Length: 213
Image (cartoon, rainbow, N blue to C red; front, side):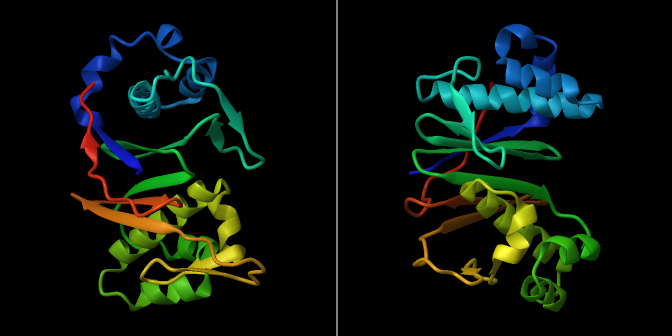
């Protein structure tokens, strides 16, 4: 069963001053933190690393020592299991499973029709336009697509031509040659945010754990 963890950035800013990134993290995470130009992004990236480390420790690993590889689309893959991060606004979330998993969290904002046209199919954009709360509809659709793309190990840039999604989360692949794969979604609305986890092995039935580091 997939595991889902949430960290509230507002509760952990004090830990940033105590974190020595060179000692705490792998070279990969250190370089990601240093590449952030804005302090806010550095904090997000550091706390993402701390959450990742916390979750990996539940499975006998650490962020510093865990062995990752990358697929052709840049998704980092564990030797065993799968782990995925996302952050937006006040929250960092992490999903772990022993089968492919993807997670995405987004703050609910006004409808971005320009982005919808770029990344969403005609069917998806039409559904958004029909909703009373288009901002919520846009954000829900975005997290569905992003979590699915991350679960697949591809990018959301590729998904518009490959598939579209129905309002109930059904994946409709274009020109599908293979039998449909089984995909499961769980959606959580969280005080102005939309979070979706996508799993392949079986329905996600667990509760999201709030992490206090």
